[in-house]
Image 1 (cartoon, rainbow, N blue to C red):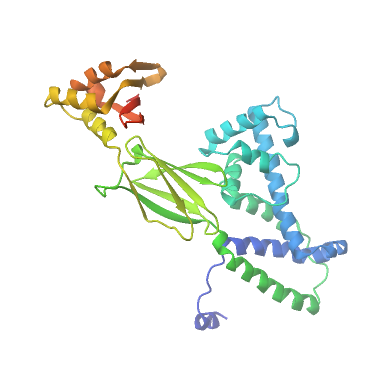
Image 2 (cartoon, rainbow, N blue to C red; image 1 turned 60 degrees about the vertical axis):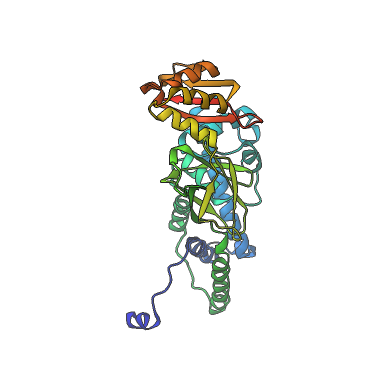
Length: 352
């Protein structure tokens, strides 16, 4: 047996979809001997009902998890109020560091019945919220219990049934393999400065993935971001930074960029240099600040340890930059807004 395998070659490992399909197929085989009345159900109905039942079970666990934090809530998804939805969104953001929109909850969690399950990345978020590593572990945990509880067959299949199921199995596996394009693929995109071609600093840029009106913040590491996108869906990346112009990039099978160039905001870059450098010619610096800062400039400095904020106008803020101190060098710009003349009109700073 082993020699024949070597001659033929090593089989390609089954995908996750095929493994899940095999678990459902085992349950389907056992159903013939367990109860003859179930023979009227088709294979597609068994498979679809199992996935939907798992999603309903996950919805129930989400409610139980919500009640751990809000024990006064004793209702169900139908009685889940707008305030409950906001509370749940906050819990998910706090525990999973992921974002779920109010519209998504109304679409997928509020209905008593669902015709299909949501996207896998959203299922992962809910599964993590109730204590699993993701949807795959949640499904495996459910299927393992189901397979173990199936009684042993009391009679063997007839050859007719086997002949009928073998081609059906092959067709199902082919269908799952041919639809692998629907499984999200991880793409790595590098973020570079348009003029210097250097990677941008990870803490100076934010990336949000938008798909089906759902926004999900992505982590930027070493100037790169990883995106999970399906080839048949349009995925948008919204890239923002106080030092670069905002850019929206579409990622799909027709547009798969390896590098995204960000155009710097010249005035913001000058301000960044002023705050981090030592004084050389204070008169020149004062004149340059007068040109790049709006006369109506407002500066909000957020103090450490939640002590509040400080406010500066143009003259007060310019005076601090003309003679920079160690305090100024420890300030981090997190937001900049420009006026119609592209002069800096608003600055939000975090004190570090």
